[in-house]
Amino acid sequence: MSGVAAVALGGALGAVARHLMSAAISGVPWVSVGFPWATLAINVAGSFGIGLAWGSWSHLAWFEEWGRAFLVVGVLGGFTTFSAFSLEGLMLIDSGRWSAAVAYAIVSVTGCLFAAWLGQRFPGV
Image (cartoon, rainbow, N blue to C red; front, top):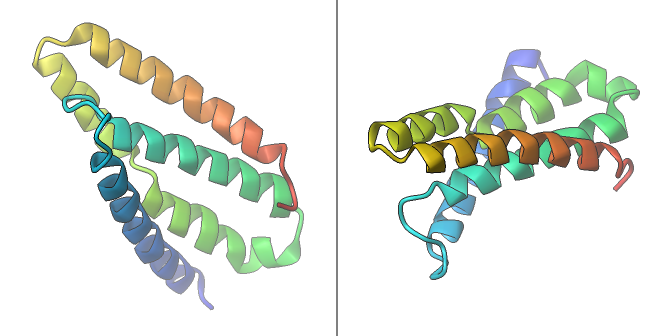
């Protein structure tokens, strides 16, 4: 599989997974409206996934040949939503909700870094 095909296929799968997870989280009754919980959860899950993939397979030939393009750039690139994170943070600021915007940025960045670190600690899962 070519690198472009691997990214395209992975990206399509990641985008569909993002849509399904966002819809599932948005349908949870206790999730408050007005805070981007789905995007936050997707970014943390994607960060865990990238740490897990890197910790488990970065040293393997198939990962360098096509797995990195398919899984990291494609699936996880299509799944994670940092562009949506940026827009939602800006929307919180524009609506005057500075404390929510700051909390969202801090929890997103630290949560995603922690999730990537944690995922890297589970190689071979």
